[in-house]
Image (cartoon, rainbow, N blue to C red; front, side, top):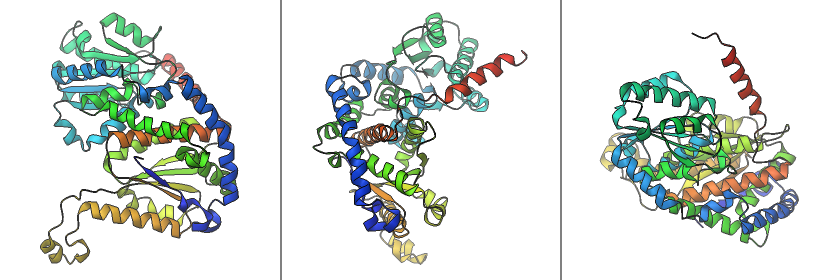
Length: 435
């Protein structure tokens, strides 16, 4: 497997009364059996795009060609989208590491996913619009924030270049049918890719929504999907729920919620390249589970930095959190610290060590400290940070959240509560006096 999941730190044998007992775990696991049966049936019949995309390959040549065209024709790609339209792509290109490393690929990506006018205006002022493309992503084609950003960007291109330039500089991903984004695309000649109407934004990372940004920076979309497929194959082929890692994770989370009032889930990867993965997880968990007065509040943390900002609370605050540490066992050590320099500073413990050694030691120490203080802690161990591993982790959490939702009696694919705030925002915009 591309990762391993260790749950011993969530059990009462390791952490005492705060942990899940054998009976509690068995009860929750037994409940997952019919859920997995339904998942297996959907998978076999190809009824859910989410479960079919990891095996799809026929769409990739066109996406590869489009990504190559964008790299060849432009120096900047501005991605306009929010929530699931942005977070998946951010997590994927996070594999490239620091933004300076991304810029070496020949094209710079800029995500404008928050409706902040200073960000939009600042980016537009900083780039050469003649060398800039815009990728607008909105499943419904009616997301107000994304549409407002699109109109401002389109306005800037029309002023700096021409009306006709929009056809060359704007691309869109949206579902078929009538929508404001489709009307704009028709009027100005945007290149449009269809968004599957049956695929929710937070589950869309293996579609063009996540694959196209990844391909633009030179990542392997087929390998990402292959990693996800490996997790799905194991999940639907498991002889029992205990042999299905996502079902086991869901059973642990629900048993902790039911019997120990653990209603917060912290995901803490120990690598900058997985930082955006943590934000992607946060949306997936929050929108899928937070319904009808139930749910598990997700927190995204990052090792080692959040050992210096959140660990005090985690170790000595309320025992209401389940921790999932993602630990990278790097087989290729990074540059070692010069023993002479370490000696001058009196840092013998760093003599000849590398940053990889430091991170590994701190991840181990944090995990053990959490267990010692009775905090439910599971470990995900990976030996690479690449496309297959990221695809596997994403599919693990997608299946885990779907199973968790069904155990809690909620639909993982809806988000009804947010519609009220959207309606109010449109109303207040309508009522504002015109300038």
